[in-house]
Image (tube, rainbow, N blue to C red):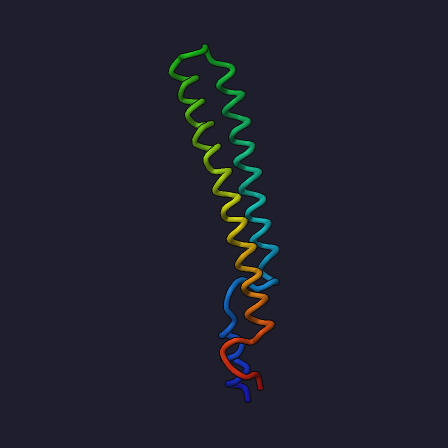
Amino acid sequence: MELRKINSANSKKGIQLSQAFGAVLTLVLVAVLVIIAIFLFVTLSASFTENSSQANASDAMVTEFANYTSLIGLVGTIIFLGLVIGVLVTSFAFGGRRV
């Protein structure tokens, strides 16, 4: 009886709902940090002379951090789909009969 409980606990696939809070919180924190970095580099770029090497480097950093915003949306979609798949797998109990 004890062995069946251990095997059923290890057979869960996908992201469980109990893990959703940590995944979403991490995603939100990364998004906030990217937004803060973009704001800082835009402010820094405005303080330099236009077309100087410092201003160009700051503009390049803004562009690089702006590329991360699309990745945050992609990771959010993957987390959401993982949650949906995890809920569906556990609710339909694919892979055998429960005892």
